[in-house]
Length: 212
Ligand code: ADP
Ligand code: MG
Image 1 (cartoon, rainbow, N blue to C red):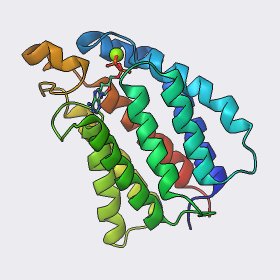
Image 2 (cartoon, rainbow, N blue to C red; image 1 turned 90 degrees about the vertical axis):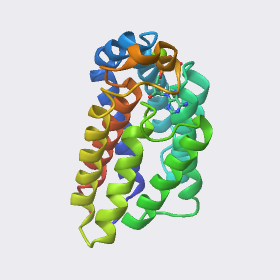
Image 3 (tube, rainbow, N blue to C red; image 1 turned 60 degrees about the vertical axis):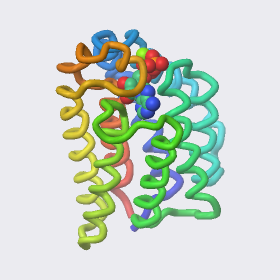
Image 4 (cartoon, protein in one colour; image 1 turned 180 degrees about the vertical axis):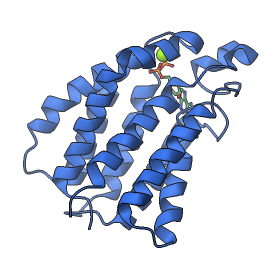
């Protein structure tokens, strides 16, 4: 039971589909506390990613994630491009030389990727950023696996933690990114990046929970 190349590809296509479906919603969230482009940014990035991923057939998981990273970095203008790029770049580094990822490999790779996002963007929990969804998700995954839960239910717990983390950004005052320019007025709105990160955790659960 682990993550195959096909499942890692499914994670990317699920995320691209979820971003396309939620493009307006993410943009609406970003209109309230940013410049209204998060859905547009992520959709442009993931639309550019898909043909590159399809052209990779036969590559390994590390190359797949690195390709996603490079494409997001070069096609997404906003803060989210380099940050998601950093996330996928670190996933690529952690997967190097592995034909498949065990649940433990994936959990460690996700933790390292979230740490890389934090190191790049300098956001800590409660800053009202994507970290507020990603970090609890990664911690829930590690805790459930350590407690002996199976991969599928651990991935579902990670998804639930990301969802809760995104909802919990609502009362927060933004301390990073464009929303921080609003100060107290950023409170009362859900963070767009935390919301897209929750979509990423849903895409992951859908791709990885089935199969071997
Ligand atoms: P921009 O803010 O440049 O318009 P986007 O709208 O695409 O970029 O993305 C905004 C999202 O990026 C925010 O909702 C937040 O979650 C995330 N973000 C912004 N700055 C940071 C940061 N320093 N660390 C982590 N996430 C951040
Ligand atoms: Mg924006």
